[in-house]
Image (cartoon, rainbow, N blue to C red; front, side, top):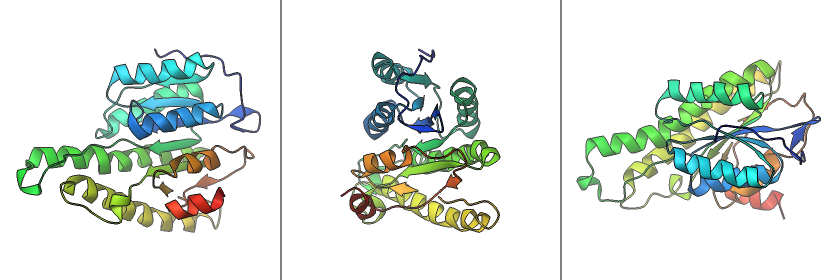
Length: 236
């Protein structure tokens, strides 16, 4: 189900064109919920995940509501695969305006029982998946000097818990990575404004609505970090 259908509602747009949004981990869970949220605003949505069945179901859900969807199966732990997926989406849906890193993997077990292979896989998907997604998103957004990158964070990046060592470690890593990324993007604002974003569910939908709000085509690349209480305050 790789066909894009005409979009009737363009509430989510830059100028007169609907936004193009890419979501990783789009086949289920938070990623699938983010896909629904953006599709409801009229955005064209590119779905990335490993499982084709889940992607096709998500695209079908959008298209039944007269939305526009395009699926690009890829493993986010593979940079080249993510890059190819982004190229396919941009060719089909247009320049990427918003990129949401939502893919993750975890192992629910005591650390002593987790194999090195299991820990590596969870880290590659959750942490490196966000890094690869951010690299690819910036590659596509820089030429247009606009865009928003959203990292789906977690409360477990602030307060770790037992039995989730791989997931907690990866989410802490994403926080540190995003914080580091803010410095060069803020410096870039001197000549061409830029900003980087981490949002923690359940406030993710609020951040999605803010990111997809209509704005002028000249809007710069955004990359601002947000906490759950910030999302709540902005949407009271």
